[in-house]
Length: 88
Image (cartoon, rainbow, N blue to C red; front, side, top):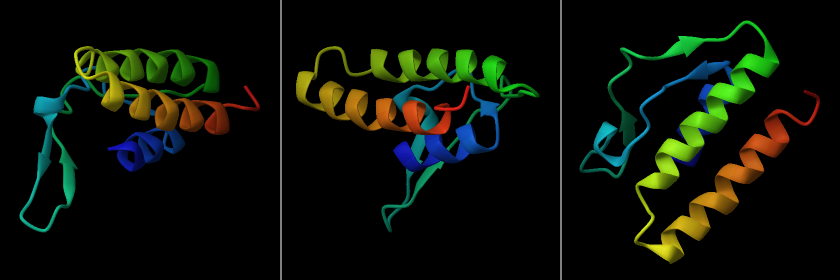
């Protein structure tokens, strides 16, 4: 999940509806992201950063009742946001 988020950030794409039901795991534990009808390519770093932060918040909302999982995703996604946009 974090790798997909990171790849989208590098490509300047936001999803707009990151929730657990939009991720599918196959029988070989490969993760796929679905539902790209609201996805957007962003021409500027600043627009992409805002949209990625929205995506991050939407994804983290899924784990409100699972503090350990929430903390892990907050840490991992925070590192992606900070590394991808350190120059923004």
